[in-house]
Amino acid sequence: MAARIRKNDLVYIRSGNDKGKTGKVLAIDAEKQTVLVEGINIMWKHQKRTQERRGGRVQQLAPIHMSKVQPVDPGTNKGTRVKFVTRDGKKLRVAAKTGAELGNSSDR
Image (cartoon, helix red, strand yellow):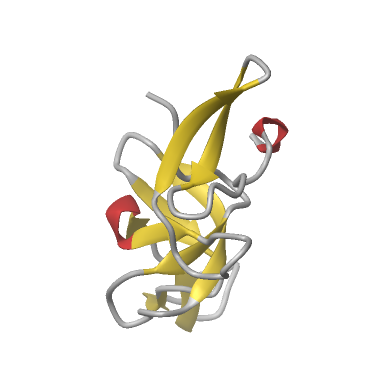
């Protein structure tokens, strides 16, 4: 099945503490169906002191489920559903309402 969300996509956060924000997808875990989004879902990790590093609290990105994000429509700058269409023999992702193309297939 083709991926509706890909790395480097600009996505809209649909729910949670960061609802309404947008960010760039940094990584995708297809098996767990989660994504890492830049600046979204930042958590504190408490690290014990070792010989190599100081102890303390460190901020890090936590994954968010794919169902909680939508690609951003380039025309309206709002979250959109994704449709797949074939143009010139290539399968493309397009915004469901406006039909605007969402990224290129070379972005993978």
